[in-house]
Image (cartoon, rainbow, N blue to C red; front, side, top):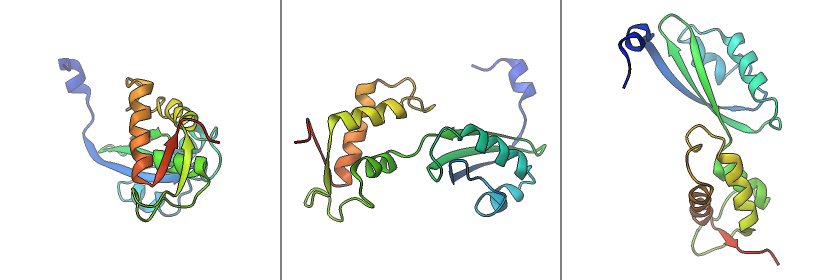
Length: 155
């Protein structure tokens, strides 16, 4: 429950913008420029902050970012780690999943790979209170829908 002081000091939100930007590669060009420019946000401030926050990731890693634009032309943003499908494709070394999941197996991964991805995803703001086991089960479900078979150990 919010206190009265928090309610009175809230800033009115103009928009919530969701983008996928390469890590360390935010530039005031499309897709970042037009998305932020229409709300009169400071493009260079966002680019510098985003690139500083994502410098620990490899370049060209697709990062999901949610930007909250306020009416006074200020903004806040949260950066999420790359999607589970991106991690699964990188771990399996494939470009895309199976065209017919459930019928055609694209590749196999071990439970150890799933566990490592789950440890990375646990740092996400939406997954920080979930157990490692439940995150792993979710990742296994995503792998199955991509046509990736999860085995105990790779032979």
